[in-house]
Image (tube, rainbow, N blue to C red; front, side, top):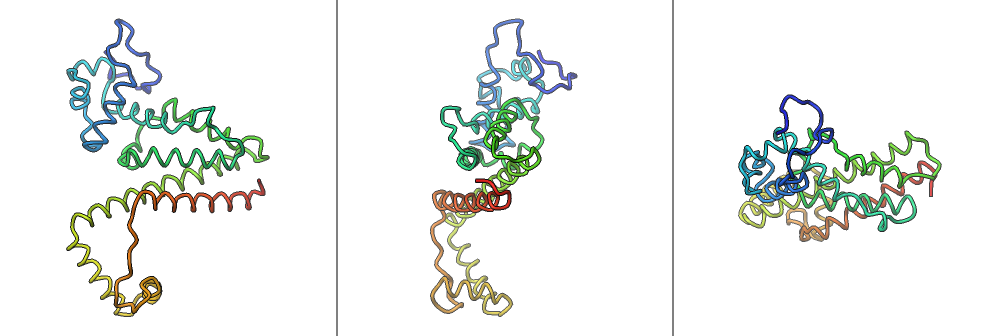
Length: 250
């Protein structure tokens, strides 16, 4: 059984060796991810994960010390999905960074709760592999170490911010679909605010979008993951354009 007094990260601890393990760390992580994806991150407890594995809670303590260990395993499993297989890694720094960015966003969108729930997770081996892959994407382009780090950080920040915004937008869209009366009330309030004259830029923008007077609500295009992905791609390429121009790289 893992000792709760050992402060080392779970990665520094050997897996149980006194008998053949019934559960591998990958299985524990997968079970915890299933719980979080269906029931939310707060539902991830030692008892709930043990039940998902069809095991007793005390059995789980043989493999992990506490929920923090489970969270670390979850984060590392997510980072494993972010990694691009070597045979799929494209040539060229821009194509490589684009591929990493797309894969990262795809995985984050598949686990939307992870954007705000894994901030305290211990970085594991797959997080290091992800950073190693990002460094490999920027090798041989004539940048210093700090410049490569800034390039990677800029792309990572854009991906995380876009994914968070996309999750919020899709959640709001789902709530709106479920409560059209609320949407109508919000639109009515918004139009009333435009009529007050305090928002001239919004009034002009919405008037142009509607092709009519500003006291009419503008048409709203359907909000879908496909539309958000297209927006992400345009933003990613604009960011890489700016990075290439600023750093004078091709």
